[in-house]
Length: 205
Image (cartoon, rainbow, N blue to C red; front, side, top):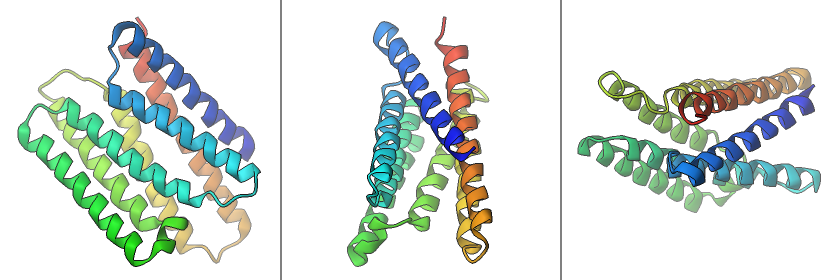
């Protein structure tokens, strides 16, 4: 069941990348940063899977992924904003987050080589804030990337809470830990379906 959820997520992500790439290269309708995020996600997910099967530690890739995710989704929302103050907030907050994480890694390099809850929480919550600002803007503007943003907020909040619960309950049984990873894999599938639905509503025609 776990493998089915994981590989289903990979497949839906790849389908999203193909569909959004088609719309981008054919009509230039898709936001280049969002397309870059999908391509980056594909590379990271498949790289982590390959390293897992090679029995190689791939946790450092998770840190590269969440940092890249912050930068690409931050630039994505920055490109959607029209107010200078909102654009400045995104760029400054990304810069500060990268500075904080850079200092953390310099003080303790091992943080980069393992599962980093602080980095996950910091980057995820910043992206959620960007998405919520976009929702606020859509009250008076056109609803661009509405469903994708719902997926962003839903998945990042839910997964962050799930990671913290898993960390706080690390002494519980392996069955409980396995269940939490299955739930996260299921949440990713829902997230990718939101992105797929966004393409259907906004770009498929």
